[in-house]
Image (cartoon, rainbow over the protein chains, first blue to last red):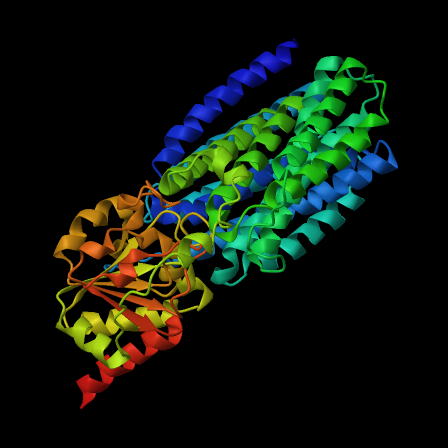
Amino acid sequence: MPADFISNLYVFILAGFVGFEVIRRVSPLLHTPLMSLTNALDAIVVVAAIIIAGRHETRLTTVLGAIAVAASFSNMVGGFLITDRMLRMFKSRGSK
Amino acid sequence: MTELALQQYLDFAYIVAVVLFILSLKFLSSPVSARWGVLAGEIGAAMAVVVTLFNPEVTEYRWILITLIIGAGVGVPLGLVHMTAVPQRTALSHAFGALSAAMIGIAEFYASTTPVTRFEMGEIALEVIIGSLTFTGSLIAAGKLQEILPQRPIVYRGQNIVSLSVLAGALGLAIALVVNPAHAILFPIMVIVALFFGVLLVTPIGGADMPTVISLLNSYAGFSAALLGFVLNSKVLVVAGALDGSSGFILSVIMCKAMNRSFSNVMFGAFGQVQASAAAAKEERVVRSATAEEAAAILSAANKVVVVPGYGMAVAQAQHKVRELYDALNKRGVDVRFAIHPVAGRMPGHMNVLLAEADIPYDRLVDMDDINGEFAQTDVALVIGANDVTNPAARTDQSSPIFGMPILDVDKAHTVMVIKRSMNPGFAGIDNPLYYLDNNLMLFGDAKQFVGSIVRELTGAHGH
């Protein structure tokens, strides 16, 4: 088993715990924005896609990387945009 | 700057991005700080993208720039969709996320200059399988939510055996590749089989189970990104994927609990096809109905009103009329609150977003557990487009398919009024004994029009 795998597993398990504790505290009121926000954060795979598309190995990998850049970047842009739109709508009686 | 030093700067930027991501989710714990969460996430994401462009491995920028522009061009309209389209937009974004993860995994398989080890092959195969099935599964879910595909479960005899065999086929191909990574021809076959399994997985699932399915797909999309982080040895992906995956997982658990069902029952139970037999056996029973005028009189005489919204409110787009009703009753000094069942609607939190869009203050939206004790002191419970989540059979009738599901105890209110098109049963074809209770009044009609007529009665009478 490669050493990288072990260190990644550490990070994965710790991040999983942090995620569980942080997300458990999100009010059910905001579960829809939670889903769109985590979706936008997950779109960080765009950084891997950029490297694949920009490394220019074979035509196939460049095309696959390019599709991945477009798909994940659209999630990033759209995810943050719609999350902010939704959260702006949540007003308490005091702030009206 | 040496390449090594540059790499360290890049890694440092990724660490800052990860910290901002966690803060982003932490800010979401309260509606007051939630918008800071978006800002933190945006800064983190922007930073990670910009520094990646300086990665020494990136030599060719043309395709990156073109596809970033295409991505933004697709993302902006998807970020501006109407609030009623949020469930299908979310399913579509799970599809895009999974597509991206699968594409990168496939590229990594074909890019390797050195032959992949068995261990790497296993990681890539698993990542690509999960990414592929999540991609097609999410597309099917989006199609059902957009009503391009039928919302009813599509089932046939032996379905589960067929679906599981297809999954076993994909995993078998993955194992064959791990045993001998040189059999590269098996790889594209594995991808196609996994894509096909995603279709089989979601097709049999009915519309009312979408809150669970969309959460599960969320979790798969997250975990495929985390696995990709393992493949590429990228910690930022591992963390972001773990956060997204655990979020989807927590939501799935909440949704399953709110329906008193297990994951496997949602995925393989094909809920919603047990209609007819149960409903046909019922003898004719007395149902009382009321007009908008009568409903308005009862509402204006009440002190405490609890509105129970459901998917029917979303379909009829009645949330703005509901807001007018809320205003009219508030003006008369009636205390109006909203009872939100976790699985009301088509995704977690669906009703909250629609009511917030209609400018109803969020402190008037109350979770099931907090409001259930108060129905006994409630004068009127007004049910708008919700059915199964108010069905008292879930508490009492052991033979009911929804027995054990936590429900909103509207039947305990002094008067219950249910706005419904007709006496047709809900998605699962389950008869609702609530409608035959002595304290229940049926308000037959379209949710939007009926609420509108009540509002006219309330405000009209006021003006005369």
